[in-house]
Image 1 (tube, helix red, strand yellow):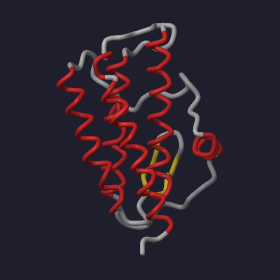
Image 2 (cartoon, one colour):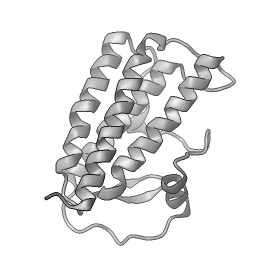
Image 3 (cartoon, one colour):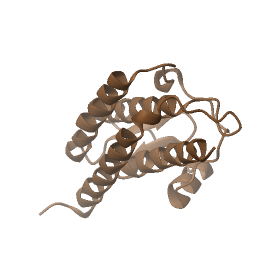
Image 4 (cartoon, helix red, strand yellow):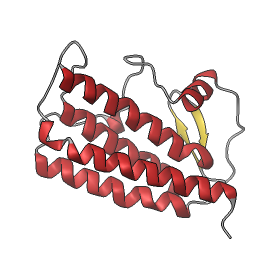
Length: 164
């Protein structure tokens, strides 16, 4: 029988995969932009979410050795508990910075890549982790939650862009 932590990771991965399907359904709106909401058009938010999911999963899967000492982080705790990321507060790291002008084929391809790699989280070691530039160490049991919160943040921005 799977451990509680493994079951929670599997549920979280299922939620993230549902968000990938939601992002996929928005690819047709990739050029929509509302500058008062975001300088990025919808396509860049989709691309950023995909890059983040792939980057985080790869970081988790390649960690080896002991996890650095965990330290309290008020922002991490707030984000993971409330499920909200404050808008316009953080700079996007270079590895997750989207490419302007991605076409439909490119966006569908990166979403497919994200869906494929996110599934691997279910098999990640329980002691896996990654270091987020603003939130610090995120343990494996919280990785799907982080991705879910991050994607929901961008899905809300996309919703506001489309509402104009």
